[in-house]
Length: 208
Ligand SMILES: C[S@@+](CC[C@H](N)C(=O)[O-])C[C@H]1O[C@@H](n2cnc3c(N)ncnc32)[C@H](O)[C@@H]1O
Image 1 (tube, helix red, strand yellow):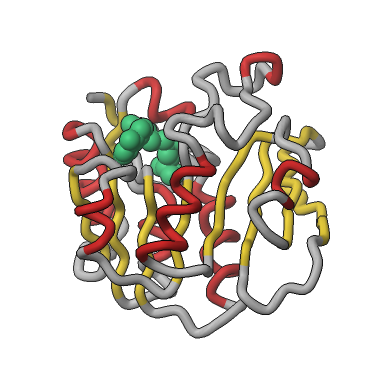
Image 2 (image 1 turned 90 degrees about the vertical axis):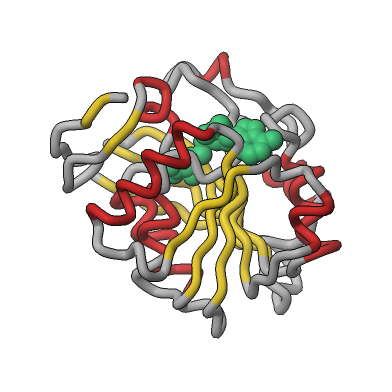
């Protein structure tokens, strides 16, 4: 385990490992996602599938009463639990160790909105290493999406690589697709699949 120094990526010293430091959602983007999602409906119970060190769950805890992160890696669960204390949201945010494709686990949970953040690269900026299909993320975004719709809710937000096209996303349903640019570079997309959309649309969100 390492303690990341305060940077633009995280404004507090968070517990992490080297890989998580690269694959977790930067705090300012997680803050944006949490705010954007909470402005799109009355959501009080959120679940994140693939919660890693808790970067997104922590920001969701600022807007929602009850947040659960599910993560396979026990060490990351421990780091996420420490991080939620560091950010003062541990009363609202809890982490469960488990497989997000486990039907029996998902069946027991309840949520108004679910966030999906599967793995798609450990080589942060190298676009050629990013997967370009919703079936190839780890675990498969399509499987996570379908299980979420079956057991939890149709309000789904997914963080995905920029290499996945809007057309491919539309196979899952209509969504608001945010192209997230950091320092002028498109780094990933966030798709908000919400019940009342009658078509997909794209917007650009820029961070310095
Ligand atoms: C991109 S990271 C998530 C980042 C996280 N949302 C954050 O902002 O800190 C993907 C995570 O999915 C986890 N993971 C991979 N397969 C999984 C599975 N089948 N069930 C649960 N977690 C899984 C990995 O261990 C990794 O921590």
